[in-house]
Amino acid sequence: MNCDDVRILLHGHLDGELGVLLDLEIEQHLEECPKCAREFATLRAMRTRLRDETFRFEAPPELKEKIRRALPDAPPRANGYASRRRGFVPRAIQFAIPLAIGAMLALFIAPRALRPNENDILAREVVASHVRSMMSSHLMDVASTDQHTVKPWFNGKLDFSPPVTDFAKDGFPLVGGRLDYIDDRPVAALVYQHGKHVINVFMWPSAHTATSAERIQPEQGYNVEQLMVAGMNCWVVSDLNQTELKAFTELIRAHG
Ligand SMILES: [Zn+2]
Image (cartoon, rainbow, N blue to C red; front, side, top):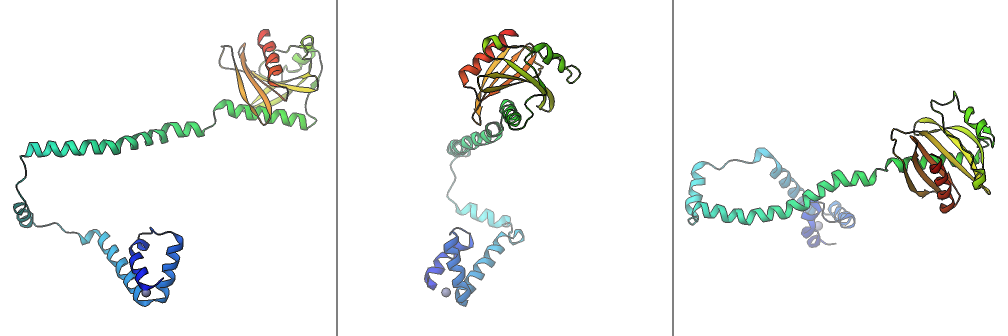
């Protein structure tokens, strides 16, 4: 890069518009060429001076008047104002609308899209708990296929009494239960089996009394069903296929 090339690019370099590679080439030239370096220093000093507030001054009233008189007669004020407004407003709107939409998107939609909803967080929690229970030897605190043994076991361990039903005749035998911790509270975990598959049912009281069911997006390869029944928040997790897990969830719902 010779001096002529560098001179052309000095302004862009000063304003940081050139990109890293060109900037580096110019910096290198400025280090070796005192003439260009001086010119660059002058440019930089001028820019600094122009940005200095104290460098500005008000034109005296006489000068303003002189300039005004030198200008051709302005059209009648009302018209001139209106025509300028007509030109100005649409242009302002052209800029304002995309800006406003952008701001609204940034304020309302983006945080919602980015923030995982409550169910996503709970789904992650119950799947993590299911996986932990399968990995450790802590699948059950009380191993029993008898609902009349499992239900009383929770007494005194939780501040609610989870409904415990054995669905053995429907192919989903109850095998036990344990205490778990979901959504910042102790919950009941009932363990069922279907073939070789283990199903964890997490239960805790809900503030809602309405009955509802929701299929949750599979999480880490596990199927998750959520239902609200008889004032209980109920999360069902298993590696069982979605259809059979849904059938199991229907059994729970039917029993209320
Ligand atoms: Zn030079």
